[in-house]
Image 1 (cartoon, helix red, strand yellow):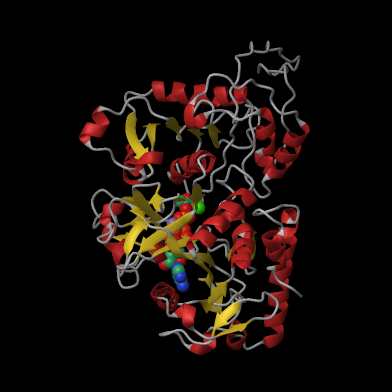
Image 2 (cartoon, rainbow, N blue to C red):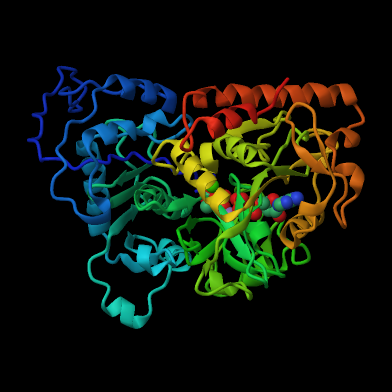
Length: 549
Ligand SMILES: Nc1ncnc2c1ncn2[C@@H]1O[C@H](COP(=O)(O)OP(=O)(O)O)[C@@H](O)[C@H]1O
Ligand SMILES: C=C(OP(=O)(O)O)C(=O)O
Ligand SMILES: [Ca+2]
Ligand SMILES: [Mn+2]
């Protein structure tokens, strides 16, 4: 399926007691169909409408008994605090236990109807102390191979002693959910149940749902252990300097963490503990639209036997892939085991990060190619989670659309964004990490008039961050966003470092800058009522770290 792969999880973090099924009462409509009238149907057409319905419902009152270990259910009070709908911008909605079971049974029945299913037993997290065991039951070899590549592969001995998994996925993606089932707005549903430790996939075959669903589970489990889960890429230099690359889909986490001069720790999902960083996964999931051997040799070479290519168009006779073809989707992908990258760091762990790079693909073309951030600015931009991509395939879409996704992962986070932000601030402070904002998007104008910043320039900028030379550069402060921008970066034309220079229409530049600043300000209004750190100082600084105009 050609989707962008953001997960929609209908989860429920509580255990439940089996309540007797409601009796089905049929309607008197004489159309030959048995209508279940025992509960009113959900009329919502959109996720927003569903959210509003959800808020009016009282929280399910289910006792939390019998769940042990990391999955221990939280108190009702705590649970209410953690309600997913309190996370603005989250595409997830809370689902009741009964509906979960309806979908689960549908998926399991479908899988049971097949001659064979595929079962993967694998691990998540290279940190052995905080590793979980996952089982993936799927109908298609494609899904099984994908997870074989993406999760950590056990040794034959580890497989022998695998035991009971901590979490199980039932992937019945070829089979739709039933649109008469409560909450279903389409034939696609990805349901996550933390109490049962299960995930059910119906009606989508986008493989990314499995990995991102498990990532959501980690976003719940890890913070409970004071471990920060991160939607970021991660690599390490020869001297052991670690960099994190945060960013929404398509901003460059995979591309920039895959760097021939550095060790790859991982491209998408990490944990930051008391001892350092660890990759959650055992593979990478690279976008391959317009992939070229010259610009991205490591990713190009990783596409070989064993790699799963998704949604690409290829010649059926020569089997040659046309990476430029976007007729299926822009979101073409390659999934390969991390060891397909020659300089992967195995085991995928490293020391505390030195640089925290926030990536934004600014299709408005007003954010500088690179800015040095103070801690408060880093938090402001981390909580904002901005990017603006352009709909590449939709005709007539000329205006960039801003996306704000808290912590660069509103779809995956399970707690309030400020909880993750507070942990990040504490860790960055403690280990003296520097924050950076890198625009991998447009320069010289917005989408339509300007062009995307050359990957070669972005790589030079990243090189200068890694080497420490950028820290020592001369800086000036930009108007409105108040960002510190360097006057020179080796290998990058100096005039592009301040975006105002690259726009021929200065009036349009100023208007676009103010427009984007307004969008930032508007988005941040939900976060004015929070506290980060022990006193109010950092909180006040974060609130002041946004655009001023
Ligand atoms: N200046 C740039 N910096 C980073 N990526 C760029 C740049 N210009 C073009 N690209 C392309 O943008 C895409 C970034 O996607 P990817 O690295 O997969 O993002 P993510 O892992 O964050 O989803 C790649 O296809 C890459 O080739
Ligand atoms: C795996 C995905 O993430 P990203 O685009 O961040 O690499 C995805 O969107 O399906
Ligand atoms: Ca994504
Ligand atoms: Mn990626």
